Structures are given as C-alpha cells and as structure tokens.
Amino acid sequence: MDSLIAAAAQALAKGDPLGALNRIALRDDAPALALRGIAMAQLGDFDRARSLVRRAARAFGPREPVARARCVVAEAEIALASRDLTWPTKALAAAAAALESHGDRANAAHAHYLEARRLLLLGRLDDAEGKLARLDVSALPTPLRAIHELTMAGIAMRRVRAGAARAALGRAEEAARWARIPALAAEVEQAFAVLDTPAARSIARGDERPLRLEQVEAVLASDAIVIDACRNLVRARDTIVPLATRPVLFALARALGEAWPGDVPRDMLLARAFGARFVDESHRARLRVEIGRLRKLLLPIARVSATTLGFRLSPLGARQIVVLARPVEEDHASVLALLADGESWSSSALALALGASQRTVQRALDALAATGKAQALGRGRARRWTTPPLPGFATTLLLPAPFPGS
Image (cartoon, rainbow, N blue to C red; front, side):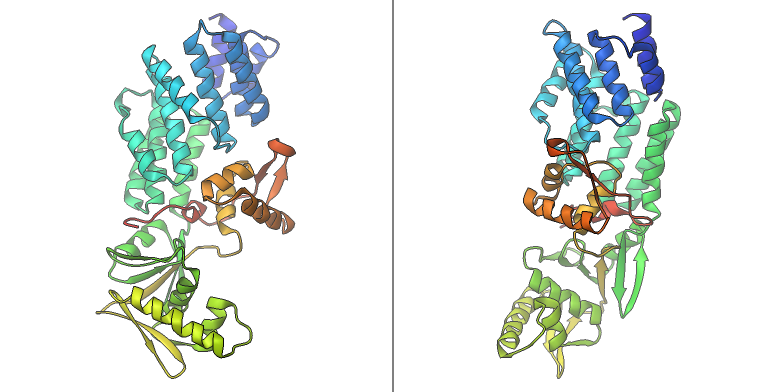
C-alpha cells in the first residue's frame, strides 16, 4: 500500500472524505477506486459510491479474494445506507466467509453486523439477535463494538425494553468516544434522544397522555387490559388476542376501550367499525354478529355486555382498561415511520420492510407526496423517497415488530 492510499484510508477512518479525495481523486487503480467509493458514500452520493466499489471489485480480480470481499462488504454497507434492502445477502455471507478464512475477522464481523441491521429494519428481531449472539464482541475493534451496542439497543427498543436499550446505548457511547468518529457519536446521541421522546399515547377513563418507552413498558407489565393500537391486539399480561387480520373487531374493541367504564352507542360503533353514515337493520344485524365474535375472543379477560344505548366492555377482576395508541395517527403512518429515519428509501425496500405489495406502498407514497409529507429524488430505478423526521416522536416505535410475548 503506497503512502497516498494509506493516508486516504486514515482520513476515511476519521470521517474525513474530502481529505481522502484530495489524495486519490485522480487515480483509477483498484485501491483508489474502493476508497473513492467509500468517500462518496460518506458524502451521501450512494449511486456513484456503488459504481466505484463495483469497479474496484472487478479491478482487483480473482487473485485478490480479500480485497474483492471487502468491496462486497462495502457495497452492502452502501446499500444499507441507501435503504436498498434487496441486495444479495448470499454474496455478503460468502464475502464474510472469505474474510474469516483469510484472518480478516474485523471486516468479517462488520459483514455480519450489516446483515443484523438489515434484519432489524425488516422487523426480524429474533434472527438479528441470533446473528449478534454468535459474534465475539471482546475481539472487535472499538468502532464495531459501538455498532454492536447500537444494534442491540435497536432490538431492545423494538421489543420495548427501555432498561436494556439505555444500558446498550451507554456502552455504545463509551465505545464511540474511544473511537473518536464524529458520525458514530452523532448516531449514538440520536438514539439516546429516542428514549426521551413520546413512543405512544395512553387513553384511559377519557384521559389522554403521551408515554415514553419506559412508560410503555410499565403499562405492558401492569395488570391492565391493554388495547394496543400499535400492533392491533388486546393483551392482559400473558394473554394475547391478536386482531391484526380482523380490523372490524379491533375497531370495536378500541371504541369500547376508549369509552370504558362507560358504554358506546350502537350508531357510534357502526360508524367506527363499518364507516356507516346511514344505519339500517342490516347494519344492526352485522353489529350484533361482530360483537358476538368479539365477546367470544375476549372471554378470558373481559366481558362485552349490551346496555340500553349500546355496548360496554368490562374487565374481569380488579383491572383497568388502557388503549395504547400511536403518538401520531394519520393515513400511511407506517410508511412515514420508515421514512422518518432521515434516509432515502426505494419503494421496493419500503414494501419489503412493511410486508406489503409495492403497488400499495407506491399509492401511499403518492398520497404523502401530494400533501408534502414525502419527497421523491431521482428517476426510474434510482428513485428514492425521503421526508423530514417527525419532530418530538420516537418514530421507530411505529415500525412493524412484535411487542414482548406477542
């Protein structure tokens, strides 16, 4: 490695892409192409960065497997930064194996962390946790230890484990301080801010208030019956009634929960569950059928009874009922939650992360763009979507992932 390449690599390690480019911007040899690609990625030009890294991989050739594997890892990191979640994971696994076999354990571990962070974005928390558990953290360099703890904190947040998340972020902060990489320290600081912003709203006895992650965890651990509008389920400690695929029943449960300990008139239930403006006997008959289904599902934890005006939900035992709602409720909230991380997303990556069809996501993006809440950058396959973060809300808690025990 010549002196200019070494100096450019050191500049990139310190988060100085312009300093690196000053040394290698006019060079087209394989090491320079790879470093230029990383520099462009740090500057946010992901399309150019990916092109340069691919050129570098081809230039290294088959006689330099370690360098080529590092280029594959770099390309995967660029894809993750640009929220392209469709990149080939088999190629990354093969690169990690090649690096491991040649003794480059740090970059092999980095490849595993990239896959873990991708799994985290997709809501596959068990898979991400399992991948992290197989890594020896004590043998990692300081920057990778910070990334490890950031990933563990992300998993804990999605599982609504505030104490574990705060402890992991504390370790990440210490590692980032030793690494002296400003971008890494900023990422840790941003993650800490999530813990101090509202993650949900509680609605009980007509009172509505915002909840931080610690408070959401306390509500879930209490004896209360929680009607969870973030995951569309009803839970009481270890008893969980999933209603994500039965939106009518969940709409009825939420309306009854918000009115507790009072009742809800039949006309209001029809409007909430069916969107009915004009009520006739067929609507009333359907309401009775759906109430009967809800009554049967909630039988272990609550009773649904008829009143003069409508219906009432009553918990079994000395419990209260709490509705746990999103901090921001509007159309296409799940799409906004992903966009609000400040990165640029493709519609295909959004569809993959949400488990929805790409056409459904595209319609949502068009609607958000029409109201100025989302913005498209680029054209065709290079088109990406972004939006400013929602101020004052922990939007990561809006993303699709199970609560503890669900």
